[in-house]
Length: 323
Ligand code: ATP
Ligand code: MG
Image (cartoon, rainbow, N blue to C red; front, side):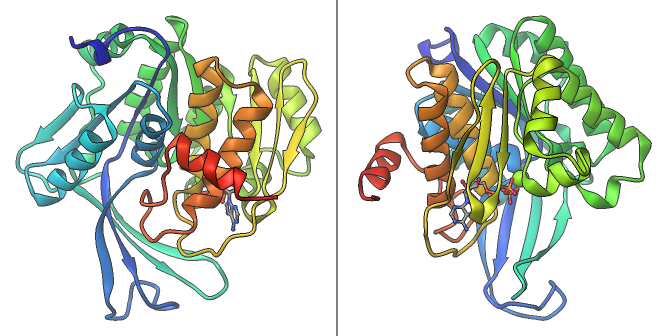
C-alpha cells in the first residue's frame, strides 16, 4: 500500500458509477430527440467521493465500470481527483452504468437510468473488500439512498455499512429517497436500518417530508441525535441549510445567490464537503457547514453532475467574494 492508501481520517463510499448525459433543451422528458451533452462522470456516491478528495480527504471508493470508453471516463476522473482505485473493478461483458437527465421548466427533472443491469451494480462488497476498507483507515463511510434501489445492491451496501460501523467507522447517510420505491417494504427497511447506525444524517427537504412527515427540524433532529446520530443536517436547496451537532445549537445558512445551470449533484457535493471537513479535525461544525453551503452553491453553476465540484481553495475564494 502506498502512503495514500493507509493512515487515519480517510473517507470512503460505494455504489453506482455512471456516466451522465444532460439534455440541452427543456420539457422533452427524455422522449424527444434533442442534443445531449456528455458523457460526464456521475452517480451520487461518485460525486460525493470526488468532492471529498477535492477538499483534501484521503478517499477510497468501491465501485465498478465496464470495459469500455465510459469506464475510462470514470477512472480518469477519479485518478485526477486522487481517489484510490484499489476497489474499482472492471467487469467484462457488461456496459458502464449510465443516466440521461432532462430538465423541465417547473424545476423538476426526468431520469432514465441503466444501473442494475450494468457494471454499476457490481461494486466489490465481499469480505476482502471490507478488509481493504477497514485497512484504509476510515473516519467516515458514506452511503447514498440512490444505491438502494436494487435489492442486491441494497443488501451488499447495508452489509458493508454494518461491518464498518462495528469497526468504529462513522456512517454518513444521505437518504436520497426514491419515491417510486416507498411501497417496497424491504427498501424502507434498509433505509431505516441505515438511519439507525448513522453518525451523519443528511436528508434533503424532500427526504425529510417523506421520512419525518409533519415534523419540524428540531423534532426529527432531536430524535435522531437521541438515537445515536452526532450530526443532522437538512439540505434546503435554494433556501440553504440547517444543521445541528449533538449537544450544540442549530446553525442555519441562507443559500448564496447564484445562477442555477444544473442542480444535479449539489446535495452530494454538499455532503462530501461537510463530512470531509468535520472529520478532518481542522474545522468546527459551523465552519464545515458554511463551506458545504458554499460548495453546494458552486455545484449548481456548472453543467454536469460533478463539474461544479470544487477545491477548498475555490470554496474559500468564493466565500471571500461574498458579503
Ligand atoms: P441532489 O440530490 O439533487 O444532489 P439535494 O436535494 O440532496 O440535491 P439540495 O438541497 O438541492 O440537495 O442542495 C444541497 C445544497 O446545495 C443546499 O443545501 C444549498 O447549500 C446548495 N444549493 C442547492 N441549490 C442551490 C441554489 N439554487 N442556490 C444556491 N445554493 C444551492
Ligand atoms: Mg440529494
